[in-house]
Length: 479
Image 1 (cartoon, one colour):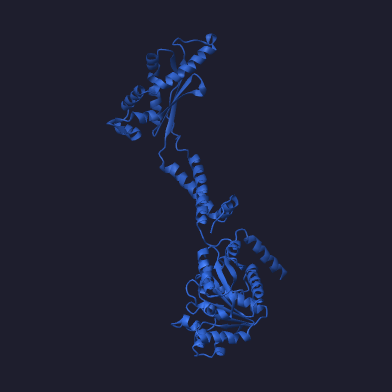
Image 2 (image 1 turned 180 degrees about the horizontal axis):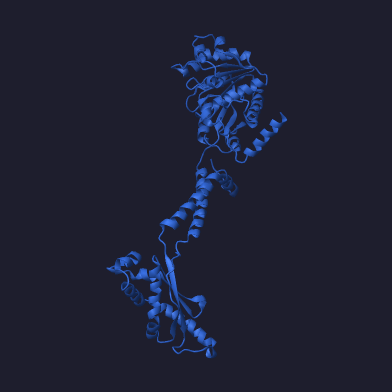
């Protein structure tokens, strides 16, 4: 399926995973804080300042003119080039060697061809004319505050004589002596932490959208109808983990039945909507049998079958619910009824069909459980006798709901299509893929069955929680 990329789509996808965005953003910020505070090497900076004169002779404020100042500024640029030469760096290395062990200097600057790396020493220096004035600032940044200050003072110590000898014009005078500063200049913990937060935010947003871009599962109910040209007959909202979660539904403990008194209003109302749409779908066909299936296991087809049958029964329709999923039957567990006899024993005539049906489990709702699991469930479902049973029992009920195995696993639900009104396909939000739906639809079309539409189960619509809680509270007050 081709996905259109737009700003709104990116925002919607990212907002849908805002907890992950917040977590990743904070985590990256914390990691960068830890790295900058405790892992990355700290560097300390010291500096000295020199005043550049355009003449070796001192002058007072009375005979200073703009030409002298401009000449000093120009001379400062020349001094910067000279002081950055290898000759000066060698003097710095020699000065440091007289007060520090070579191993200590190698730890800070590294070693090249048996001696201290001059280029590494040079990179530690920053020289500039302060604010484009005649004041020359010499800074050194290393892993040791004492060495940083000493490097600056070594340069300041021999700079006057060296510059006068090399340049032959002007002079410099030391203004400030460098002193060790124990507060590290690098890394900037605040800047690194902020960069971590920004990186974490954009990285999480990009990753989330990239995964969503390649995620082919169902996320939009409108897209299902548009792609497969079949209606979505209902949407069942996700139930929060308050004792009625997905794991319990898979166990078939009945925790998601609309019969439960504490079930949220929006959940029971969704099945009433499905009931209305199914009734309209039945109005164009005389057959009363509806198969409920899904492409894959664990998509909620049995829960939908039970709740749909219950909703129809609550509408004073006489309903028969048949559990034709003999391999993994759960309907008897949901209603907590025995399963010693049922569909399997009725088909092979061990139990009379009328006795296999459990009457009025819910008012107006009869249930035919799966019965003991046979070695050949597909053959039993495909048997002529089961077909004849459906035709016979159809006269006694307004609706017959048949819960069958997943279509992409076995084709049990497609062997009696001539007596069906149609098939209702249950798909799970963010679990069932479009490819799996296509595979199931192909199987339905090959059997000449009628696909009535889809039920989108476990729909997690962001921002809908407050709306539904408000409706629940409103109806609770009305009661």
